Amino acid sequence: MNKIFEIPLYPYARSADQDAAAPARHTVAVVGAGPIGLGVALDLAQLGVEVVVLDDNDKVSFGSRAVCYAKRPLEILDRLGCGVPMVDKGVEWNLGKVFFDQRQVYEFNLLPEDGHKFPAFINLQQYYFEEYMVARVREMQAAGKPIELRGGNKVTHVTPAVDKVTLDIDTPDGPYQIEADYLIACDGANSPIRRQLGLEFVGEVFQDNFLIADVIMEAEFPTERWFWFDPPFNRGQSALLHKQPDNVWRIDFQIGWDIDRAEELKPENIDKRLKAMLGDVSYELEWSSIYTFQCRRMEKFHEGRVIFAGDAAHQVSPFGARGANSGLQDTDNLAWKLKLILDGTAPETLLDSYDIERIHGAKENILNSTRSTDFITPKSETSRIFRDAVLDLAEKHDFARPFVNSGRLSVPCTYDGSPLNSADALPQGPARSRPGSPCADVPLGDSFLLSRLGGRETPRFTLLAIDTDAPDSLTVSGLDVAVLRLSAQDAPLLADRYLGTAEGAVYLIRPDQHVAARWPAYDETTVTAALARAIGKEQ
Amino acid sequence: MAKLNTTRNVAGADDVYQMLIDAHEGLSKAESDALNARLILTLINHIGDGEVIAEALALAKG
Image 1 (cartoon, rainbow over the protein chains, first blue to last red):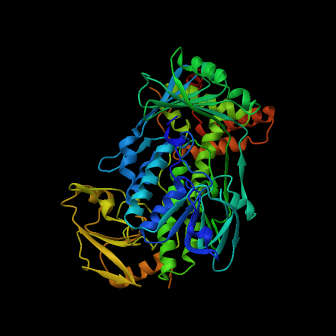
Image 2 (cartoon, rainbow over the protein chains, first blue to last red):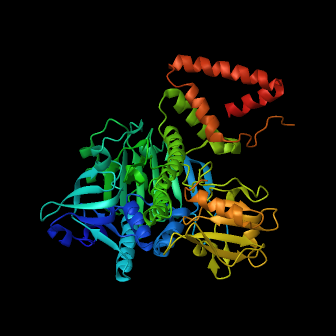
Image 3 (cartoon, each protein chain N blue to C red):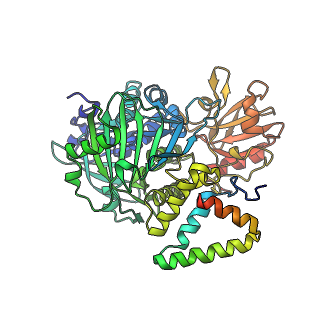
């Protein structure tokens, strides 16, 4: 067997910490080497923050699991140096079709906007996603970045204190301890750390099961997302077909609540379902699993020096691809803030804005994914009657189609109302670039705007001046602000995405490429105040 | 000449759909049916135009 998820990529190796007389001190310890744990570790290490990642496993994700990745997380990964391999390997798709019984009732096109480096969506097995992130860890290590990945290290207990967190770790060589200034728990929906600390994780439980079958086959299906409500091959339930790289097809069958898991997972029973759906095709079953889900979140995303990110902090249904995609927006939001706090440039209270902004994001994701789930799995007879009525009408009548909900796909979160934002001083600018928004990409000759914005080696803010004056350089509160002067004459999409009807504009852009403030022209006092606000030093 | 508006006319379709489904939460089938009947009559009054109602009925009957 030589599947990538069967090869130990970060096998257990004894660390010097295990022989230390006293627990070794680290700056940041990350628990969990999934996409979120690796994401935050790469971001921190790139910023020069010493980080150790601990995982009880030593391989990438077993099976494809999260397969849909949206533009925004790909942009985030590009800032971390591993977005391009994902897209090179991934399958791009734009078209989705919805079937009710045997009829196609609805079709949507993601209609990707021109002028972006990254596509709207790619499908990629989570094991590849993690493999490329691990490869990036190795590259960073080779370049001398302070990042370590320890497989076979199971964190069994955490002890938070005012100025540090102590971790008890079990290994094949026995237990040891380390200390860290901060602990980031990316240990998944069942987060043992969250449980140990007794932190609440409340929300809605959905009484349903979904069977995933990843099959390898040569198939004629187009590269589209196909969703069925009540198809002949899965009566009264739903099904999903989606293409992944290497001729792997993701098939999800809704199978209801009262099931015998072991029976459902028998290859002969999966085979019956697949034959009913696909006819008499030959295939190889790569991976199968049954999942249930909940939509819930923590009340707070950090408790002192223990910070939660990804599924550990919030869990959604899979409809809409809002799990891993939102988790990477957590890490994007967190890394630069932690760096500024560790440097003493920003107050510790800046971490409160991580909770505010990402709870805002989690609420949005939970609302959308709950609605999709309620549409896919109606909870009452009346709810099902309305759902079926929508699908019936949608086949012939366009007006009913906006009500069809087979998943509202992940879109980047705009931090409206964040305390880090300054009031919008450019109302004539496009709403999409208002304070709190993630910057939209724009082609700049043979490069792209996002490649020139945001923090990489430093938690860098950018002052973007379009067709207006700005100083050559700027240092505020000990932070060097990068100044980028551009003209809409050279890049017409800048006008569309950043000027609106304004003649010129100045944007203050955070290290995570979100807009902190914008104005029609540069003014040192206002920019200085906005920057102070954006790092949690509200005057 | 058709008077019924069959173009998309609801801003925030997901919000409105949730409002509808939430209104039925916890009701028996009979209670839901009664709520739907009251809702339809209320909306008929709001529309107020017999021709529009006739066209909507024809559309719904398919």
